[in-house]
Amino acid sequence: MRLIDADAFIEYLGLDVEGSRKNNLGAIVTLEDFDRQPSAYNVGRVMEQLEVNSMYEQGEVNPLVLLDDAIEIVKSGGIG
Image (cartoon, rainbow, N blue to C red; front, side, top):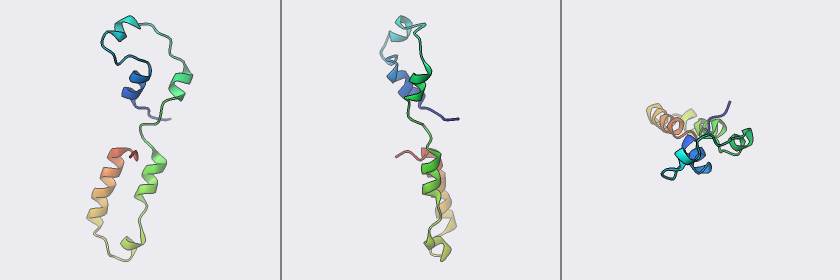
């Protein structure tokens, strides 16, 4: 399963312009359209950013600081 950015998908379909949703009601969307969308949450990137570095292992980093950083990484979805 992969999460996509719904706002980006709406823009991709051209439905972000006022009145376009009513005019395009019933437009055909294919699986290829979904496949072209970037992931909204990059699990690999999140895991990469969450790796504990040698500073923590040596006791040089406060674990609460790492927890705060981890929370921000997860909230961002690893993007950015």
